[in-house]
Length: 230
Figure 1: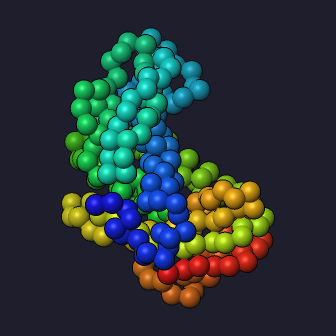
Figure 2: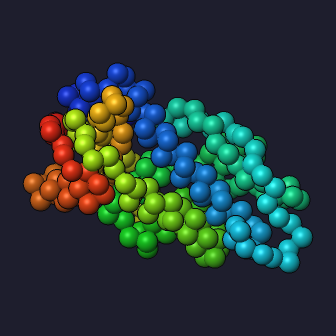
Figure 3: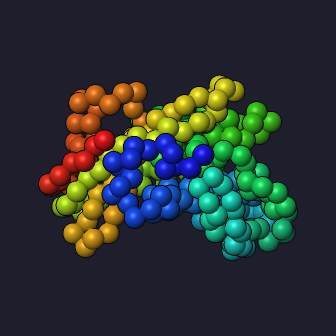
């Protein structure tokens, strides 16, 4: 299903095409996958990046790989090891990416998930045959990036801010459930659009949207001349 089938028509009218919005989501998907792969390699080598180790094997740059998801094709950087013994689980060398992972990653970058929620979601992706230490390393790698992305500074002024929710199907407790991720997109003064943030919410109450605006204000946004929501 295309993301334009999940979003309100009035929200989508602000974009040149469904692809423009897809590109926003693909950027988040790409960074999330790459951080998960870094965590996998940390576990494979037995030590974190930029740490010293007696292990004869070591990191050895990156290789490019094209992956295909419901959001379209993306070029990602896959970390390599010197012995070439590292075979990523989430993006196997000679296989397809784990099905449905793009939905999981987008929801991980939404504010409202605790560290334990993130770790549990990562475990759902990899399955219960993966060790606890491996899950922890992968969770640590992506959590650090999630926090940095969620708290990045915003422009002081956005001419327009559009808000709406996207419904994603993700696995949780071995069941497929719907999760609504609310998205805010701002029009900058230079004419470019920017995803300001993602939030998990149970309903679209006034209190919820006020918390979203308060969050954006705390990150530097001072004026939103027009808020377009549904």
